[in-house]
Length: 173
Image 1 (cartoon, one colour):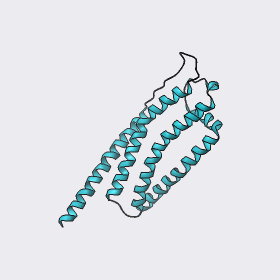
Image 2: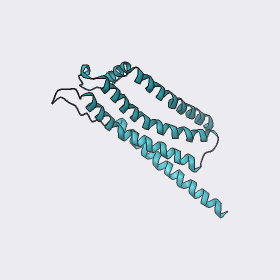
Image 3: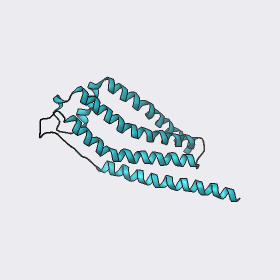
Image 4: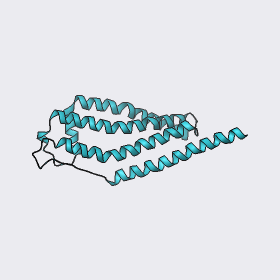
């Protein structure tokens, strides 16, 4: 049953790795749809009518960079679960892949407040003097993701050390 779930997770990761860049490319081409999504998502007091196309493309690039960090993590998660689906459970490569997933998850969680701050500054560039914005947001969601990333990082580090000890023990036998 574990191998089937691992295969399902690996296929899900592959679907995300394919769908996310395709959706990002589509939103880059259809910047008006991206702008509509951003307006509905961002709860900022922005003068939306003053936001130029260059600012929308800048926000798109900023958002894609933030998402790319997560996609890098999903790539390593897919590699680990593909190995799990093949029955390769404990080896140094899987442990390193899980560690890299945890690292990218941690980086993305830490980058989210920076992403929001840069986006608020970018979207308010055309505001009159004294009305430009800098919005910083760190919620419980980011704190939970950081905690999960740290836990996964520690567990993957333990797996890497266990694999090294196993390899060392095999040399004595």
